[in-house]
Length: 177
Image 1 (cartoon, one colour):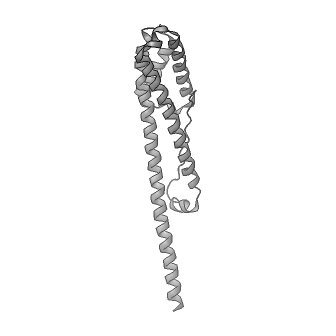
Image 2 (image 1 turned 90 degrees about the vertical axis):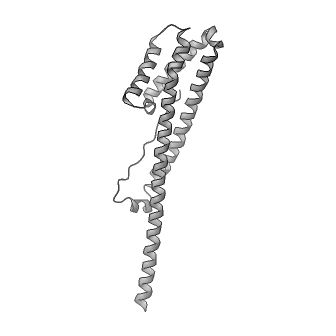
Image 3 (image 1 turned 45 degrees about the vertical axis):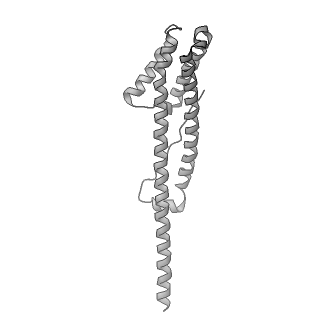
């Protein structure tokens, strides 16, 4: 009688623990997929922003002489496209890109014709809006990463991933200015 009750209690505890571990594993994998999707969205936005560079250059080249900054911007964009790399992840490259764009925008705003050019103003507004969206998305992503990485040290998640790799997701840096 005692052994039957004891084995029933032990079996119930093991069953509950198994259910908790299965549910925690499901939620953990769901969070990983969510982080991966978020990274993909950010990468697409960065590439979309790069797609605006030729339009920006076209809009300002008519009014501004070709200079080294325009060549640098073209080179960075072409490298990103050629090697499928995302320089937006590298804070130094991102800072360089933003400095080039800011410098071009300052020069362009000095030009009386460009101040009135609708195409230039739309491109400027879109690039500025995209920079803000990318920065916001990276901030949200970093908050999600902090939560994910902290859960790696939770005992339940540790039990789930004792035989799996428990890779941390990296935080992303984004220099908006």
